[in-house]
Amino acid sequence: MSDKEHNPTAPEEPVQPKDADPKLEATRQWVSIPQNSCNVRIGHGNLQRFGSDLITFVGKPHKAMLLSGENASAELVEHIFTEMTSEGFSVKRGSIPDGEEALKIESAPAIYRKLDEAGITSDDAIVVVGDAAQLDLVSFVAGGWCGGTPVAAIPLDVEALMCATVTPAGLTVGGHPGMVQGRNSIRNVFADFAVMSLEKSEQRSRALVTMVATAVSDTQNAFELLYNRRQDLADNNEIVWRDQFNESLRSRGRIVSSTSIAVRQSLEYGQTFARALKELTGDEFPNSTLFAEGLRFMARLACVEEGVSIDDMLAQDEVLETFGLGTVQATIDPDDLFRAMHRIAFMRSDRFMVALPRGFGRVRLATLDPESLKENLAAWCAQHAKLQTDSEQQTDTIR
Image (cartoon, rainbow, N blue to C red):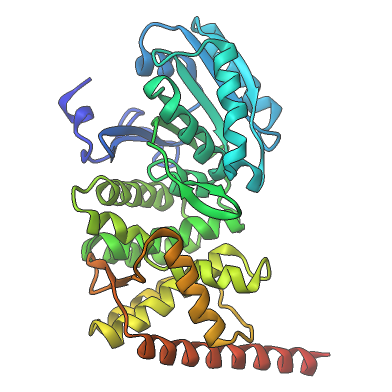
């Protein structure tokens, strides 16, 4: 590999010849992850030569485990299997659960047993074709298998690429998400737009809101770049999506690999509020909407507590609105929301602290005055109860 390939912060480079159609051109870059780096390929045609590309990743072909769920098309899985076996890999197949089941800690032992039965070692390869939850599960399992076994990930949607490759989520214990965090074992990502759809979906919305949170947490330049690309992203300009993926993944890599725990904790921006809303509203609203509300509320709170510029807050609002990320329209008791935020925070720490932006690139955990927080929560709840009333009145008028 070249020196550039070894540099986790190296800019993306085209895989195809320079005169190739820009829409068809795939990029490749190394992204920092804790104690290692991840080779990320994004674009078209990334799976055409998957077998030979995998050899450059693991060296001489040995055993390999191919994991997928029912949500992966049989044609895609068969193509990956054929690519691997044609290059000399001895491939065993295994199934992984779909949906929320994939994130439960109880799902891990079954994967361990499959790896054991297949005789997979740390010198072999694990390939996963899946959504975000499935990539999270396999990364967790592989991180502990034989002291760490490398994973090649093929994301099925844009959320999986944005959220689960560089910063996989922890697993759920006792109904509490993200409680058990493992070592990221994903070393190669093959993201192909022929597999990942850019059509409107909850997965697309989660990818977009994560881009916003990441840019605010990283640097002012990162946010300005996202701000300037907002309309092209909303319009599904594929080239802009590819380039923004590269930028956002580099940003997340820098944050999660930082030697400063304060910087790494900035990935919690908006999460405490979103989880509290989820606890109170259940499945009434998409997770992307709850996350967006977490960003909006924390930005407003930062204007009060940290003196953040109102213009910066409104700029974030504009990006969220352009991306079509909705709002919560519901009647919620502010005292219930206050208590839910405390329950969520105290699950992970003995101190009540939330991630507040002090400016772009300076999101830090902060201790809040309880009365000030209650006052801001009351204002938020009153505003969103009114949104619900206005929406209901509008619906009655249409009828």
